[in-house]
Amino acid sequence: MEKIVIIPTYNEKDNVESIIRAVFSLNTGFHVLIIDDGSPDGTASIVKELMKEYDGELFIEERKGKLGLGTAYIHGFRWCINKGYEFIFEMDADFSHNPNDLNRLYDACKTGGADVAVGSRYVKGGAVENWPWDRNFLSKGASYYTRMILWMPLKDPTAGFVCYKKEVLETINLDEISFVGYAFQIEMKFAAWKLHFKIAEAPITFIDRKLGVSKMNKGIVKEGILGVLNLRWQSVFKNYRRRMKSNSSASLMSAASGAEMVTGE
Image 1 (spheres, one colour):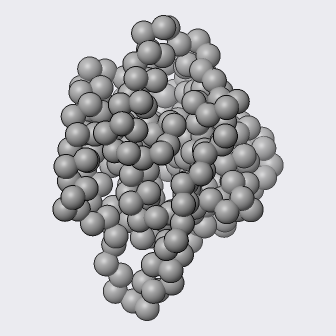
Image 2 (spheres, helix red, strand yellow; image 1 turned 90 degrees about the vertical axis):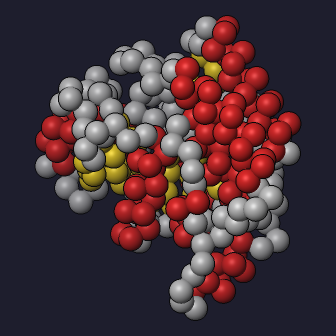
Image 3 (tube, helix red, strand yellow; image 1 turned 120 degrees about the vertical axis):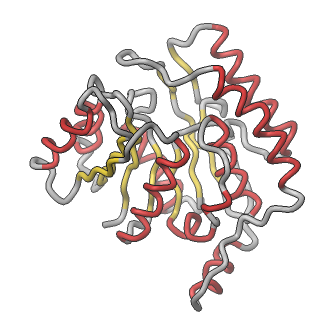
């Protein structure tokens, strides 16, 4: 058990079977964990049926109610760490992230020296397809705004297609991650950067969903704008490093030291 993809779902019956089969069709050893927030459309039932076919490779964690993207991923991170996975991925269910790019992110962490690999729309070779101009403008503006406020040299800080080494997630105090929506992705990268982990950006093409309904709303955008300002302020006081209770803390701190940020350019 080396690598696993966490896919949060809420009302993704149109996509969930296809995205699961697409990941397994890579035949490169990925497992899949679905975190379903009580989808009333039967998403979880579809996954449970597929688990008979992908026994020991496909898993589901069901939660009661729509509790937010950030808490879904943190639930998944803890589950994956407890199961011993070494490389833990975030990916959307709606094919906006191409499963074929999973291997690119994996290689960046496995052999490329990165602790965190980000599928980036805004490095050389990255692109966005099928977005209206206003959505594209908002996304690029958010990335620029985030870099300006946080001084974090990452061209796509809001990206949700990410690979983490287990050591990164074990080192970050996940209880200190305060955002659950749009700003969650920013805060996770910010925490890794503040802890001096090496972050690499790999170019991807982001394609807007064709099936289902987008989860983007005004509240998420507002959280992103205000969240970045809060992160800047809190960074003066907040320590994202988890306090370890065993001798493993020394090795984790050593792994996090002396790292640097790199991009795909």
